[in-house]
View (cartoon, one colour):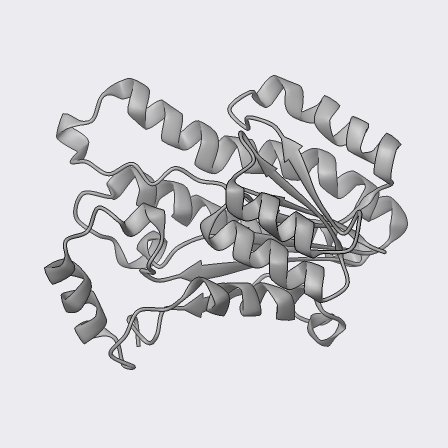
Amino acid sequence: MRNVLVTGGTRGVGLAIAKKLAADGFRIFALGRRESPDLEAAIAEMPSGVMNFVPFDLAQIDLIAELVREMKAEHGPLYGLINNAALGTDGLLSNMHNSDIERLVRLNTVAPIVLTKYAVRSMMTSGSGRIVNISSIIGSTGYSGLSVYGATKASMLGFTRSLAREVGRLGVTVNAVAPGFMDTEMTAGLKEEGRVKIAARSALKRLAEVEDVAGAVSYLMSDAARNVTGTTITVDAGNTA
């Protein structure tokens, strides 16, 4: 059974991805700071060992290398890495505290790059592997009050394209999925009026759902996507159409 690490896999999009990939036949390691009741329930529903919780704070970047080493020693090398964990802190740049800016960049950009650095090594050695970076349409469209968040998500798109060229010759694919606005905890702060306006701008006149993103990741992890790399799949109900 192939091992896949899903960061931010305890809730929302990450949990939907973890559950979908587990159903696809992968052994899932859902990483998060705390185990959520929803993840606990998902683990109980799966056969033993299929879905696993990995307690870790990605802000502790200096400990990432040891995390990957310990996982490899105990469970074997990773076949897949889903870089999903991210902070969605909003605020006008002119008013945002420097510490908040640094926290977003550290978790949304630096941590996934460093984690990928160590995770991809075993993939390169084995000659196969899949990396999927969860970005956002904000990385290309922009959104008022999300300039720092948008910057971190745009960085993951450039990272995806360049890394795909670095590791492609060794059999590793690197892709991104860019969701639009969805009904998750990160968008819970939006007023209903804002949700209606966003949905009205979409070609399908609705918001995308977390299961839609999980489906896109499932495809990129499948054998059907063996020749897909360095690209971004947008899942936004046609918001950017």
